[in-house]
Length: 119
Image: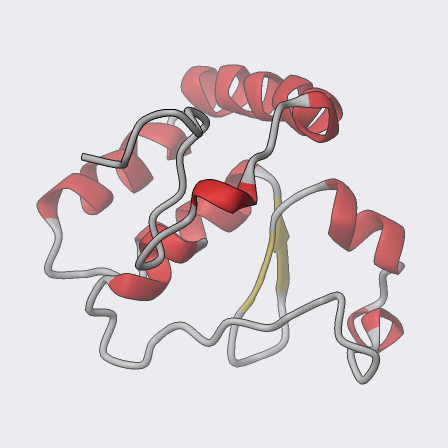
């Protein structure tokens, strides 16, 4: 999410800390466990997008970016949408087991190699 936060999005995206005590997942018809399990995006009409559809909604918030527009168009294709959904479902299940090393974070950039400075 930090990558998207740093990009110019003309305030079309608002980032919410779902671990904050004041966050109420039930107001979106979901549970905190569901929010923690996969990516969510919520539009101005309070429609909730999950998983790959959430990424597509985020990419569409960058209309000036031809790359994000292309990704959004590609992932909308039925066959690719199914494959992307399956890949994301697998990734979401193993994400908690992936290594994290926040001690190497500098200037908002993090790496896994604590013995080397970030490029």
